[in-house]
Length: 260
Image 1: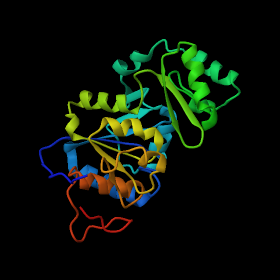
Image 2 (image 1 turned 180 degrees about the vertical axis):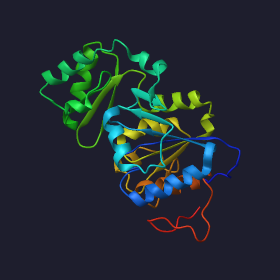
Image 3 (image 1 turned 90 degrees about the vertical axis):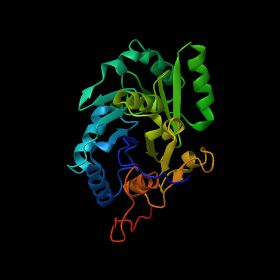
Image 4 (image 1 turned 30 degrees about the vertical axis):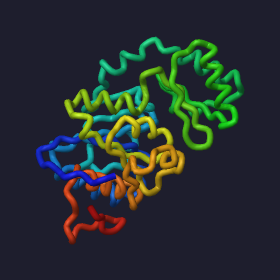
């Protein structure tokens, strides 16, 4: 995609996956943190993960530099949102009464293996369902009259959410929450469970290590495929879209010099 002309007064919302997108190279993440902080209030940074809040909080505490504190945290595949460390009631209340136990029972009855209990939340059911069995699992949920969306990724990750949840819906909610126009929305990711989020944003960054399940699902030319992996690729993409200034000749990241 064509790089954008940076406008200093422009306010951006950047929504990034965590695992293998921001994490994976500690020095690159530190470099990105410095650049985002230098941008000040012109950049609102959110992380958007498939993992539940407690798991993500541990990663933010252990793997993120002290000077990189996201303005918002989206967890459990878009079913949980917190801003400034506090859950956003207007989002969570949308999914009250969702039949988590019924969804779990249907998939278990088909003989599928649930993911570890730490990955199950009130509004997300996570199982390992082989690709060859996923159509049957979807059909069983539909036959039971359960309103849900299914997100698949990897070899057999099968996540069931309330209809209207998901990484994309949460991303668009944040844009509205922070009063940022969708034209200033940038997303970054690496796997199939980021596809939903990519389709909601005009500016998309697939890091160099992105899985083919994401890259092949996107129309050619509809996203920026970074040359660098992990946070260095995110940093590269932010510069490409004009969200962060282009590097000077002396600017170096751990993955090498990043061009505009």
